[in-house]
Length: 398
Image 1 (tube, rainbow, N blue to C red):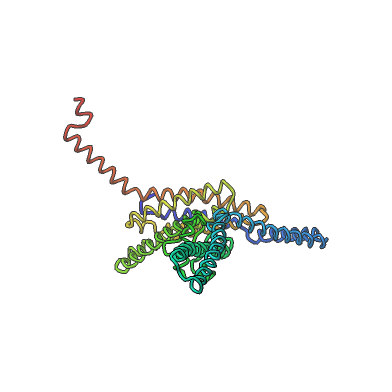
Image 2: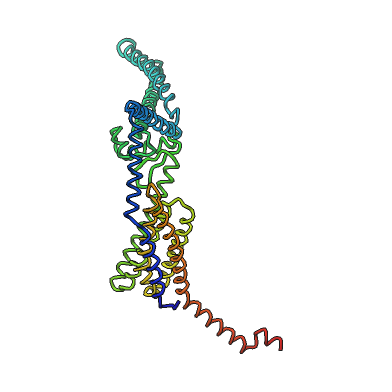
């Protein structure tokens, strides 16, 4: 096959594709399917004569699904508990501080007021009474502080539980939503959450870099970081693509190359999709080989744009016909009943794909002909130079 002459290859593929489609008698296939479908419907009607059994079965399934959903929700809640402190900081100490602080504040406060009134109206403020009042005041102020500290801790625990309710069995929630739930500003909530994370109330808690979301676990945070990295890559690719589009305005050849490569990737993806949908190993091996060959051809063209004209027939004729053939195989394979016509058509397509794979491999090999020629020339030149310098094996034997 000549490097630039692909007419024989095109004719061979066209002929084999035509033979494959000629082997598909769609009218008879439809008749086979219709007959088998009618039999299946009759069988279903017979099975469902007892309607009470049918409805009972549906009710049981509905109840089963209901409890299964409850089980899933329960499982999610149990998983969520793994990332939440069972005894949040302040849940016990807050009560102790509040109770003892209130008792001491009341005791010292009443004593302080009583002595102050007695001294003012009866005996006056002696040195001893002044010292006593100062001591009581020194005890009263910390007691009030202890009470306020306890109240603050209990309020934080209350906010902690409200945050959990706002999460609603999810592993993340927006800061804004949490702020609304406790009627505070976003800045307050962020500071509050960071304090709770430091105290171990949310052992694996994280806040994103933009202070937008609170994440309950390391796993969710790692997924977030991965998604952010992927977003950066997409943005980078988009900027690169926009730059390419700008360059293509002044260089139509670059636009043609990009369009061709995108078309090739689309063809490869469609072949892969069909291959994934077909369970049979034999045809899967053939399609994997086809996918690999096509990918190599487009990779070579992308690296060597000047070769683009040489694969125009491959792109505009061979691949569309091949893809149509592959899709037809999937369509036949998806039929509920495989009669003789379907089996014959599938066998014909499998043989055709073998021929196409062989032809495409030859096409790929032809693309490397110029490189092989250049390498051969370089080797000849090198051998000549070595001979002239007397450095070859024959020169040493003389």
